[in-house]
Every structure is written in structure tokens, then in C-alpha cells.
Length: 383
Picture 1 (cartoon, one colour):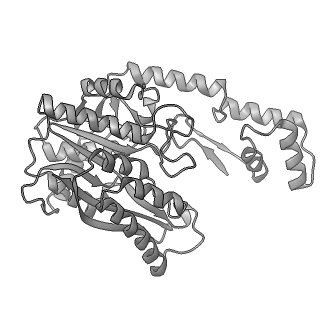
Picture 2 (cartoon, rainbow, N blue to C red):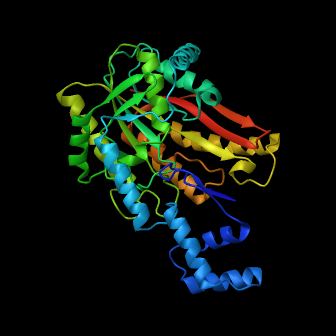
Picture 3 (cartoon, helix red, strand yellow):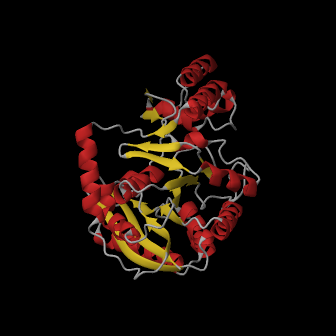
């Protein structure tokens, strides 16, 4: 077994035997050394000297794989460096040829979608955060609706916090530097939002460093808008389907309902005072299925049909603008197909209550060879 840090905070990997992996599963902050040694002896029918276990713990700690002062010092140093940097830079640098191809591919993708808003005012989008190749149909459908909407000055981008430490909404004040250029973050807007929330939602802003869900939206906007300037407000949202629901799992910070209401208030006040026009975008995928995600079955037609039925039920809640019903359904069913974006979908719908939601497309990106299926959808919210 290979142990690695999906957030990217800890470089490298640690290789573990099956016995060592069993020990790691017991290192949950609740078991003592004696507890762990006893469980090992019970499982493998041989004793585990405490000194050997302590030696393993020291190795894991030096590698940064334990929640300990060593890891916290590493995290604090990375946070310090991130805050000193002038921008949040993409983790996938490209040579000029690759950048030109990316821009060309995105331009071609954007030309494939059909505008259906008939001159209505676009206030929100639901788009994927899959890679562009797999999410292409839904990216094209969603972002086509911004053609003819050049008056939009700012985009609030709600991403999914896949691997970060924050269990509440977390923003960053950094501009997003992508291979296609620099998207400026509206820091004054964040200041007003922070005042309204009454909480520091940038404490864990390092979560943005390696998170792709917001950056993918930024690059599409850069390709779409070209030289026309715009500002962004990047926010990552936690899972809303866990035991604590909308409330942060660690009890730190506001719940997603409180955050969404604060965001809605600030947007409303801004529209009344300075007339700045904003569009809220949720970079949200739906189900994650297949053996790679833990399903003990093939991605056959019957299974994919069942997944689609579950997705369609969630999309019906989205089309109805029912943020609470969406999260309640996912939690009641224990989110069997691993919808990863309940949090940002909830915020999108709650912030834009009263908007008309028009579903545009649904797509299943299935790779049977690698036992992986991810679904996504596109929608536009108009007033």
C-alpha cells in the first residue's frame, strides 16, 4: 500500500506493508499504543513490541503523515509562504505551445453550446469541475449562456473543497494566476463579506493552492472574455452531506446557510449601491461511481441507469431551487453515489433564491477500462 497526501501539502509517498496499513487505520486519535499493539496481535496472531510501533510512528511523523506538531509546523510554513506570494499560481504550468492549444481548445468548446436565455439576465451557472475533455458537453452548455452578457463585472466562483482542511466556506484574497493569465480577486468585496459573516473565512485559504474546481472555471472565463476585464470572488465549499450537515464538522466558522445568507445580502446591497453586476458560478460534479470509487460492481448499463435516476432526482431539486431539499435527500440516502458538490450547489441555490433555474444538459463520463464514472450537469439561473 502507498500512503500519500491528496491535498499535496506533504510531498512524496510512504510505502506500507498490509500489517503497517492495518496499524495506520488504528491511528485515529482514540487508541493508545497498547490498544494498537493488542489489536495487531489479535489480527495477526503475533506480538508487536511497543518500541517497534513507536519507531514506525516517528517515521510517519518525519514524513509529515501524522496530525502532530511536525505537520502543523509544515502547514503553518506553507500558509506563510502562500500569503507572502503575490498570486495563487496554477499547479499545472504549461509551455507556450500548450497554452496556445488550451486556449484554442476552450474557444472551440465554447462555440459548441447553444444560447437559450433569450435576452434574460443571467445571474448564475451550474457547470462541471471535471477536466475539460470529460466535462466538455456541460461546460459548453453552461458557458454559452454568458454570450451576450458582457455587462457582468464579477464572478463569484463556488468550488468544491475536495482535500482541504477547512470545514466551512473558505476564500482566498489571492489573484488567480492560470496559464491563460491573471484573474483579479475583488478584495473589497471579500472585506464586506467578511464583515457581514463576522468570521475569518480566510484562515485556511491554503486550501485553494491545489484545488482545481475553481481554477477550471476561471480558465473558461478567461477564454470566453478575452481582453475584457472581470473580477472573481473564489470560495471553496465543504461537503454538506456529512454528520453535521450544513454546520462545520470541526465547529469552527459559520454554517453554509449563514454564509449563503451573508453572501446574498452583500450582493443585494452592492446591486443597490454601485450597480456592479455579478454572476454566481458553482463548479460542481455529481456522482462518482465505479470500482475506483469503491463500488464492487462493473459500470454496466443497469447500474448507470440507476445512477442517472438518482442524479435526475437531485437535478429536479436544483431546478425547483430547493437547496434544503437537495441536501436533505442526499443525507437521507447517505449519498450512495458520492455526489461531491452538495455544498456549493446548496450555496448557489440559496444565494439566488427566486431565480428561474433552466436545466441545459446532463452527462455521464464513463471509462469502463479504468472502472471510473463521473456525472455532471449544466444549468443557468436567470431573472
